[in-house]
Amino acid sequence: MGFALGCLVTAATLWRLTLSAARKAAGSAARAEAAALSAARSDAAPVTTVAATPAAAPVPATAPAVAVAKPAVAEAVVVVVAKPNAAKHTTAKPTPRVEAAGPAPTPPRPRSTTDSAPAPVLPPAEDGLPRLRPASGPSDKRGPVPRRQAGERFHFSGRCGEREAEYEFPIEWPEGAITVAQIEVSTKGYLSIRPMTRTLDRVESHSSLIYLSSSDKRKGVRTVLTHDFTHLLVDSRGIGEWSVRLYGSDEIDELTGTVEGYGSTVLAVRQNLPVSCVIHVKSSSWSAEFICACGRIPESFGRCGCPIPPGVPSSPPLGAWESGEAMRTLLFPRAGVLKVRTSEPSDPWRLEVRPYAGKPKTR
Image 1: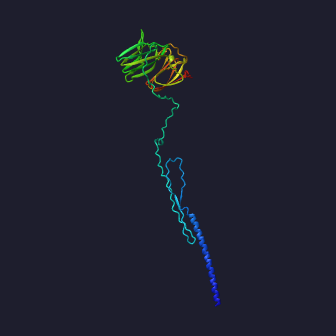
Image 2: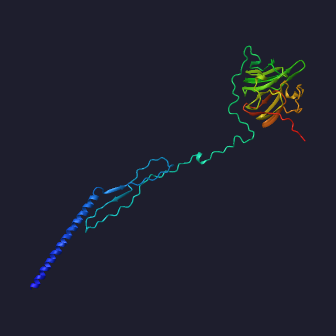
């Protein structure tokens, strides 16, 4: 009996000790769980959702300047605090990633014609071959026909009436055997000026220096008069005006080196030594003639009385008569003038004077 009572007391004591230990363990666990819950609340209370800002994509240097749309929220991270269950925490899975909406792609810029088609390749302006430059502007813009002033010498002018008429007058020459004539005319009908030879033993009409019909209305020319001519004849029909101004050979430009120009002209050759002249002209019909300083026309050069310089052929090439574009070389044995005639005032030419090398030696 006593033994049984002792066992019962011992069992009761052990049960109390076990219950006390269990209560202490439970209290510790409760305190730990409360502390964990408090810490979780303090971490989660300030922010419940966080919007992630995506990194800006690099923009190419050549991208067009366009307005950039504001990006949408790229990603949301949600923190969920689970209720305490035996000191175990559960974290919800994050929501699926949402990509930011970028700007719409810019369509390609339409290529312009200058982009898609290459520029035409032009031939080089200078390729080493002889070429003439076209006239860069109007070269026959003329004012009114000049009229002779009182006391003015070597200038002849007049007016024509409606009826057909001829007017002939003697030439008063400036000093020198060669004279350059600047002729200007205008008409509503027909008008021409031609040189005449009228002496006691000789009468001859020469080719017209200028011819003008109503379709032209205004025209001018520079040419050469020699002492083979004695008079000028004006032939007209209809109202018009005319002017002939004479210059000595020392009053005109000299041909030296290389000279370029347009239309008919006269240049002085003042070197009294033989020279070669390369003549390049482009015109539907053109001519170039050398006239000796003695005033004789090329056809009678052999009878002008001037001696032929040594080393020069007895019949040197003194003129050229061509059509279209051509290049010829003439020989000027002595001083004189070169007369160039073209079909149009804008027809180009180039003249180059070179020393005469003489005849090539033959073996």
